[in-house]
Length: 217
Length: 250
Image (cartoon, rainbow over all chains, first blue to last red):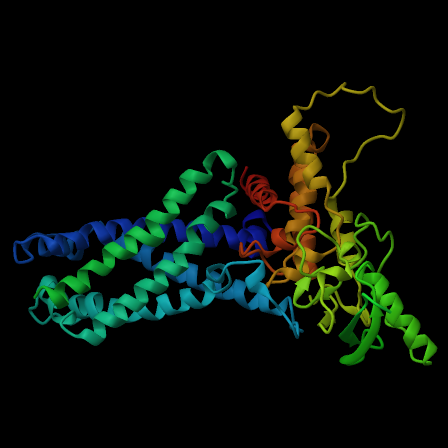
């Protein structure tokens, strides 16, 4: 087996793939949030729609979209693969087990929080991306967002999904640094600060938008 | 006898590797708080033998917390409820009169149960044989300090070398991962100049052997560090990851 194949099928290599795709998806979160915050600009969504149109029509965005989808799929696929092989490593479970005394809940539930986020993403992409790109009905993206977030049920679902995303990232971000071997006393504060940005500040900023459209309009 | 305790034990009994196991319940009176956990099991075995029953098989050797032989999952924790101690250094004063204690063997596919509480940990030996060594010509003992090693580096290597290979990391990890064990060995040798020559093939061979044995992958829950009787830090896993990345990509 050549080096790349043995790397991607090994336990450490698969973890590195998880970390790499995780970092990539985190970078996308920043871009996504930056564009979303234009929804708060009091110009009836014209700046936001300008960016949305750019994202939908500029030719160079297409390959980036494909890379992004591939990143999501790879992260989910490798995560599922690891979860299955990890389950197989303990065919007989303990009768009495107290994991809460030696590890955090967020670290033990990363697969499940990730699965929920994936389900959310399918619905999210269908609501905004698929409908506007493949079934255009004349609505601008701003109008689409406005319409979607008039439903308290839909907004609640978003907030729950963001809570799951936050919990997923609470484990995932610092975990990715560990996986890349970037763990040292010197950098602990910096890594903790980056982790807080991703698992706390960014999800809260995302949560402001559905609440704004539901409550302020 | 005053000051003694009566303990109820739920112990995993299994005749051999292929048979189906079950929990057996025993009530043990006259347990001194000063007994070690293994001495308590000795007392129980004495009682069982007197009754004509088969003694419970469990691994033990030095009973000083340094050999890594004892391997009991006690009330849902590897080596019991205390941090930084092996089961042999756990004392019955940690428990209370009337307590019920469940004792299970390490549970992991690469650690099959041989009998009762004894598991086969030879998978660790095979990982070590794959690369957990430094190939040097034997001969006279070199003079001290001929190879300068900075004190912090030597300290860190010694911290990794404290691993006794008991398997608590595997037992505690929800994925049955041996990464803390492998990381301690890789890290110890990667830190020292004597280990540099073979660092690339070492990490590749040891990780490949670890995977072939059927251990799970690390998902950074850090349960291993919390349960390690020698408090090996997960920083060594970070070093294993970077050693592996470096070996594969450079």
